[in-house]
Image 1 (cartoon, rainbow, N blue to C red):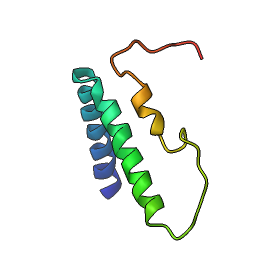
Image 2: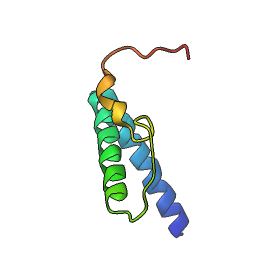
Image 3: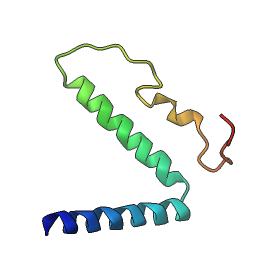
Image 4: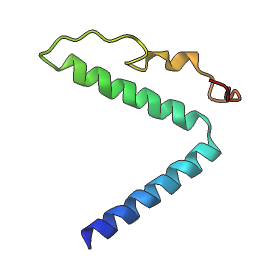
Length: 74
């Protein structure tokens, strides 16, 4: 029973995220910034020292224009 409720919650969450992206293209950029902030917080509070490039830390979020058409060729 709990598995079904959890799956329904995740499905609803996916629907809400999809609707938010359709309404506001900046939503994804906001989510990336939140993820970058969370990563920075974890690294700052860690006793370990690691070397990561800016791409790994999602520091390139300012370089992206969420309203620009996506380049489909990669």
